[in-house]
Image (tube, rainbow, N blue to C red; front, top):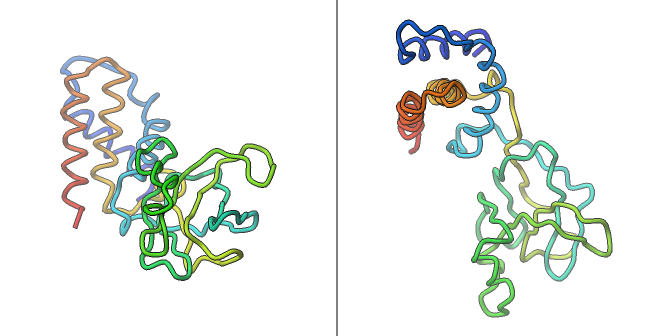
Length: 201
């Protein structure tokens, strides 16, 4: 959908819930908050509605049965990563602070071919500078993933049309937050979540 059409939809939703007789500078907020809403939605939308982008494997480093893939600058989340011998694809990366990551320290329950894991870490690999990596375990040294894709930042007009309703309600909610109408923000956020829930298979 075009950006101008999205802006019109947001305005309609704002008009529906804006307090009567109040003239707020909605136009000042719609553009930036539309793209912020798009990023937020891409972080939680069903993966089948989000276009995958290939991850560059140029500077991948291998160490201790793991690969370290640099995180792209426009990164939002994993779409799918699968290395040879992995019994399944990984579609969710965890953080190094996640309690699940602790099991990597245990030789008997750490991630392997049957239970692969991808963790977003900030580390120095092989004495290099601190960098954000996707730490993938367990992998064969030098292996190329069968698939390595991610969800990248997109401007609102490039999202799947099925996400438009949730996107425009979310944008309206953010505008109500900025303009000090918390009750209206909650209502429109609930409507955004309901629209998204209907898309989850």
